[in-house]
Amino acid sequence: MYDKLRDWTSDRVFKRVLTNSTYLIVSNLISVFITIYITSLLGVYKYGVLGIITVYVTNVNKLFSFRMNEMIVRFVSVPYEGGNFRLTAALIKFGGLIEAVSSLIAFVILAITARWGTELFLHDQSLTGYVLFYGLTILTGFAMETANGVLRVINRYGSIAIVSLLQNLLIAAIVLYAAATGGGLNTILTAYFIGKVILGLAPVLLNLIWLPKLIGPGWWKAPISLIQNKKEILRFTVSTNISNTINLVARDGEILWVGAFLSPQYAGYYKTAMTVINMVLMPINPLIDTTYIEMMRAIAKRNWELLQRLLKKITTISFVWTTSAYLGLILLGKQLLFTEWHLFGRAFHVFSAEYLPAYPIILILMVGYGIANVLFWNRTLLLSFSKADTATWISFGGMMLKVLGSLFLLSWMPYYTEAILMSLYLAGTVLLMTFIGLSHFRSVIQAERSAGNLIK
Image (cartoon, rainbow, N blue to C red; front, side, top):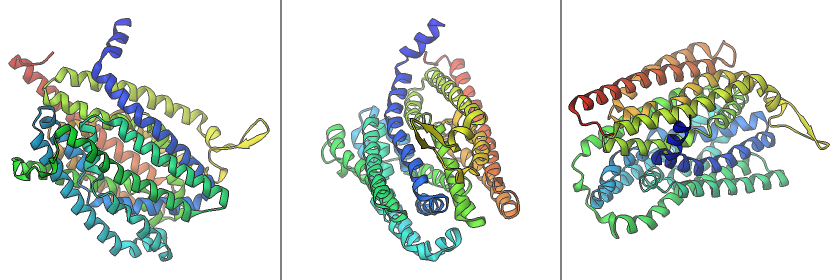
């Protein structure tokens, strides 16, 4: 037992993953408390309206997003680690240009569809102005994904967390001001807008400060012609865009589905449920970003045993945490989250009783999200072995089944039906991706061992 403990604490790569993840967890804690406070400030219906507005804008942006942070990590890590800084600069420039053009297209589409979207999902066209206002964040985030990908490659997770922390503190200040002055949806949406602008622009500014020191002054002058594998990169980005589109229809658009088939009030219940789910996932979510870059480094060095060891440890941590949290929700969740507590003569609660219909949704969603949380590296493993197409086809098949289920069932089945469909989608696609990814991984290890080239 002592040897196992020493192995965990002496693993340099694993310790770096945990350290980088801790930076992000601290910031996320503040975000959770802000969200909980906003639920009591707005009430179920307005909280649902807020969720639909922000999700609609975010999903229109995702529709044209090529996940440039994944592209940067996937293709920039090797030349950067190898000291080929001119190619590194060309790849960053290439990614930034693609993202800027796609952001402009996304904003134009949002402007065209805003009135239709408010009618379909909010059933109130008078809220169109709110959607257009928040949609300006698409333009301020013109190179956010590329910049965040670079910060991961150069191992500046602390900076990512500081930016997130500052924007969360600013949002918290505005929310408290809204509570003190009687501000409502307008003020809260403005707070979200300002926070989103900070998240969009700050990483770009940090890149402009650090890149001249790390890869040379005038790095942006590196010609894109240095990139010899443009077709491979474009295929990767298109594949991740398709996967992103599938996710926003099947998963990220959950609140929109509920708003369209039911009402913003039920969307408020689902958004509340997702707030609790995010609280549970919060300690594990940062591992997704921090693990990906370490996986890419191990694969670049063909160090399969390091990769295998890393996957075992992060899976163990996520399993222990997720299982414990789910049992806690089953046994104590209703009392802790929706019951009024009295302490030192004062009454308080996490969520008021009007949010209680969210509790069945929470328990149902935790099944699917729990499996996805434990095996969070399933898609990353496929991407690391250039199996993006496999992940896309699996997600597409799951999405089609879920969409058909939503179209035929939501209008007449119980309000938590969407949560059941969501859990089935997550569990099915994640388990299948994990099986295929591990099968490929084992075949690679076996081939290396047969050739006698396995790095110990």
